[in-house]
Length: 162
Image (cartoon, rainbow, N blue to C red):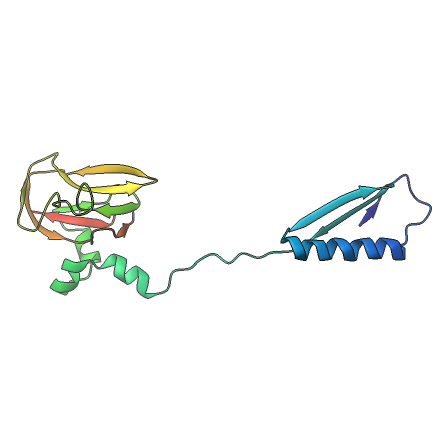
């Protein structure tokens, strides 16, 4: 609470001022507001509440699930081994991997499929935009490292083409 500089006659808080502060604090609680400021008769009162918002921190098992896809888990090989694989196709962006053009449709690729350079391997949905991910080279899909609908990170291995 701060009095205006031109009102120097009574710098102490009166009982009326205290009652106003209590009313404003009660109003904050009732309305879920975080701050109220009022100026009246040379008196400016600001009542604010400190709100700390905790960032959502994923639990420890979540990154392991993202890092090890279905084929990686079945093969018993951890996903970081695929990062340096010569046939890896990394994710060019953060988003959600979709293996088919629409739900229930046939996937773009399957393990064992032969692909050509530029052929669509999957779609990564980012900010409601469907981004087709093309094959960087011709070859055979030997492993699919992420599930359909799984969130992917930039640089995360998606597919191995040999």
